[in-house]
Image (tube, rainbow, N blue to C red; front, top):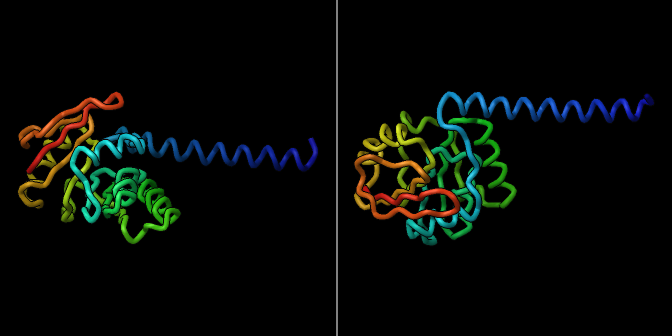
Length: 178
């Protein structure tokens, strides 16, 4: 094997090793609580449409992952805050916002949605297990004003007033009001 082929092979192995470390990190973290599943642009748009998100509104995305829903909210003329417990995903979301030149309208923080203060927002989006929603519900009611709308993908809030549910793209989207 010549030197060029050797270094090429080493580069490929390094890329594979880095990919395995990242995938392993996400899998292990996901097994401990809620796993990250990317929300498509089409799904993000539908979620924002269902809560009647408008320019000037502020979205709070709980468990924001790579920032897809917050970035879509900013694209619609609003602003957003994403709270995510996985630092790697917070970094990815920040990079995505910076690449789009919207980092002043899209804030991403690494935090615990069940312990840290809930920021003020016009609307809330989430894709969390029902058990997490149940634990989160009283915190949302205590922190956000009456009339705040919440859109949840696939999982329910047990006692919040449900406005509507709609099947979309293989998921069920639920809209609630505090």
